[in-house]
Image (tube, rainbow, N blue to C red; front, side):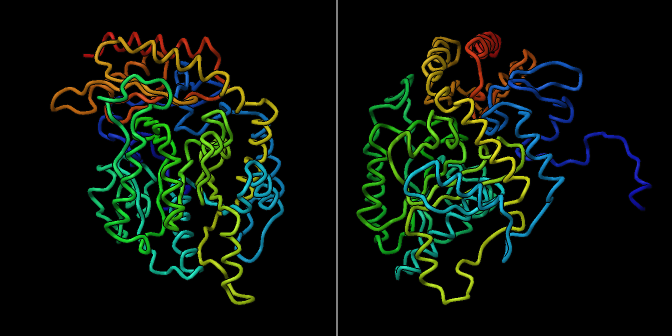
Amino acid sequence: MSISDVNVPNDLDSLWMPFTDNRSFKKQPRLFSEAEGMFYITPEGRKVLDGTSGLWCVNAGHRRRPIIEAVRRQVEKLDYAPGFQVGHPLSFEFASRLTGMVEEYSHVMFTNSGSESVDTALKIALAYQRNIGEGSRTRFVGRERGYHGVGFGGISVGGISPNRKMFGNMLNGIDHLRHTHNLDKNAFVRGQPDWGEHLADDLESIVALHDATTIAAVIVEPVAGSTGVLVPPRGYLERLREICSKYGILLIFDEVITGFGRLGDSFANQYFDVKPDIFTTAKGITNATVPMGAVFVRDGIYNSFMESAPENAIEFFHGYTYSGHPLACAAGIATLEVYRDEDLFARAAQLAPYFESAIHSLCDCKNVIDVRNLGMMGAIELEPIPDKPTSRAMAAFQKAFDAGLLVRTTGDTIALSPPLIVEREQIDFISDTIRGVLKTVH
């Protein structure tokens, strides 16, 4: 059958949807056909306020004209160029703009997603340790409830059970810190909790068990997003940095969610004033207009590769067909200009207290057992129904969608991360809608 002979109806059946209950979805599909600013629009013309920036990624709001026009101009000029042994000007320009956003990180490597950024960071860490004569350091330490994408490296260091159980531990030598979530100590705390800094000392125990000379890197999300916005206790990240420095272990921050203004700074490492050795980004890097990611490395890591390889040899055997894709670079540069011209990171910092008050007004709602927040990230955790985990939050998700609001659910937690262009009355709509929904969810 030739392509011209294919004429089949769009019955939704052919697509195997990711992270979706496909059978239920196809019985009651939720479709978007357009988007503008803070809103998605369904095929029927109904507007749905985006309370989640898509998937934590549309930080500047939808269908931004400067980004669209930049991509359009670029595709008419250069649609694709390989990144192996040749290049194109925009990739170098974008890299320079990115490294100019943060001190002490002089180089980036481009990827196409957060999952690829994580696997790239892990490979850089292993290779760097070998470059400096520490080839015995092959072990990684992740954290329970951590999410680092769906590559085999990411699920190995990640700590979300359903993402791991079918695939096993595909990297050898992985250990995990305990997560920091504790309802008895930290429920309904605004911002960073005071209890929990000591949990970072789990790393000391892991070092004692395996010996520091076997550990290449520790990877954590500064704020654990996909598992339900788990905010780090005060002093926790600082303590991790201290222990890693003490033993020569690299510290990797997964900033795929926290990067590009989500906490009111360019990156979470600036917000917390804790410098990792490597940090990953994606999502907001192009406002999700074109898929892209980037891995930042601190000064000195890149040089170790240049100095350890023979002249005229490839220094790092890694990369992707679409690394630094021209359309992604054009989208990324235009995205950074939108962030700058509208001062969106500062705007997020200014809105954060209002957002905090709005979601904490839901503390007394039925079945709510915790509300937590940091920057423009928030979560409302619900008491699970016995023997029916996730069902209460999923019911809330559907009712919110029907009421014109898109939220994100993870387990029995409702997660929120609206675009940074959100207005106060839209924050009110988010909290009011969730309050109404929770009155009706059993």
